[in-house]
Length: 573
Image (tube, rainbow, N blue to C red; front, side):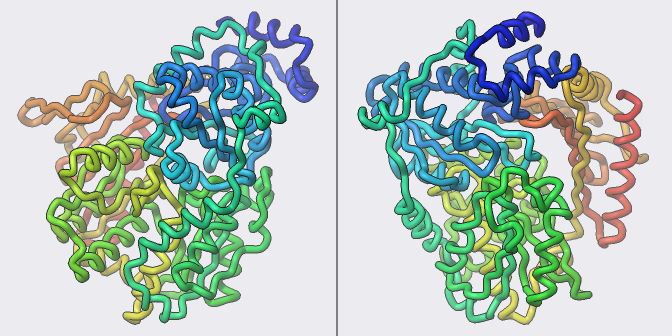
């Protein structure tokens, strides 16, 4: 694909919508090349990109093209797969409603039934609905926590999990056979409804989903602690279900941040609707101070990620990292289940390879096995499915450092609604014991050691940026550092080649995980760092983890290895 040819094809297409024509006219030469030099990539995480004209942007034509690829994949599975159909949900972003309908209209051309939510809904409810309705697939129109100019398209399999690599590859193969994505035909909504190829899902699905969440409750008396909660949906899909879920657990003192209550595709009160970032909590903290709240909660636009803030010993609100929230959830649930005799001998906890090792230490203390997966919740979901089929392990909890948690396996993706009610129950339980969640976190550190983690990323956009990211990873793979911050590198894990190399003995082991472009380096003092290009954003990410005897020692060591590594990266760029 040469970008000039694609540009000409689009500019000469008479039926191109006026807003896309205007966008093309306003583009600079560099913007034109970036928007037209390739097809927006579709992988196991679906596809995500900036809205606008061109095959490398999110628009009705890229939506149609990937949906035709999915339709062909479903057709290959037979008539029953087409009848079972596809569940479609969407978030609060620009064009999400239009894209969702475009998906249904494209599927309808292939005789595939669609179940479309009548209003915006969280990603985890989409996963739940696929399973509950026994659908063959699901599609979520969302760009998660990306800025307002983005949208995206996630595909889910019949198990309610994001598609595995093999299935995604089949869809891409079908997409690549389409010569001109501008000419793909769709059927009209009215015609499809007459043919019963579109059905709309109304609020009864919420009630069923909330009933399942209610079943997760471990300590019904905890609500007697009179916990005060402030919640912000950050203008996204959590605005209904998170408060309702908290109420099903018995929580009564729930204050929603009014300025961020309603869906808003511009996310006008935040620079980015990402609960990982401190600015996303600014209004929630103001509300917390006014109401003397015990717990602050924030969900991203599609409500699959949860951010948490609690009071420290000085009475100030501090934002917990995903690793810290995960550790608190894990410890609370394991301690409660052990007390109630609910922990089976074959219990397992799942975490990703870049998630804190604190979780492993906690799980081991309760006799729970820890299994590592690649980054991406689809890999956690794959393991859950494997354990269900083979009936050899009992899933207890799954999480990743990027604010994703799963408690009940009736959903097969990270679920901020589940996580919100369980962290609230944990906070209420601690309050009954005269403690805050922050006290509970310090207690974990005193018991297991001061684990400290960090993430640094470089955003490198466009064609040049993609080449820079590739160069950075190749440099570390082909010329790995012998030391970092004056501590020798002891082990290198290359998840692309599937090999773990001990640099002291030169012995190699096989890593029993799918191939992925990730490198992880372990230092002699137990510290580690990992390098991973993002699959959904133009970023290369650097993860760090340390464990020392005190908080100050951990922070010092973390800063040392961060500084040393970033200096090396800057020399490559």
